[in-house]
Amino acid sequence: MPSLPLRVAVVCSSSQKRSTEAHNILRSKQGFSIRSFSTETHVTLPGPAPDKPNVHDFKTTYDQMYNDLLRKGKEPPSSGAF
Image 1 (cartoon, rainbow, N blue to C red):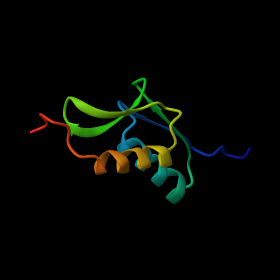
Image 2: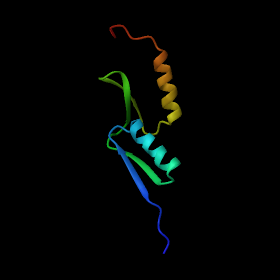
Image 3: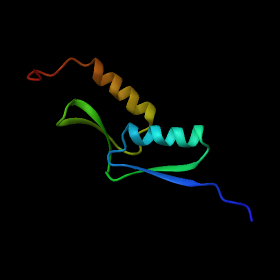
Image 4: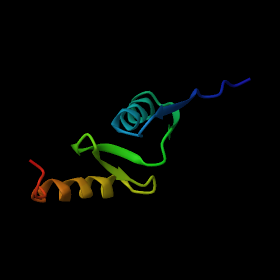
């Protein structure tokens, strides 16, 4: 009887880089069948302040997130930010 490949689920509370990096390593470098899950309703990445995270819908692609973060990084700080 052939053995089935190991399947792995990675869970991250905000679906931040921890989950996506683990997903990448386990799939690309180890060849596991893997899926990532989150306990939240959106992808939440660190923002300009602890109470101002960058929030993206799960349907947002990594390229879209990357471009959004690049754009936000080039915007001047809003008045009252300091």
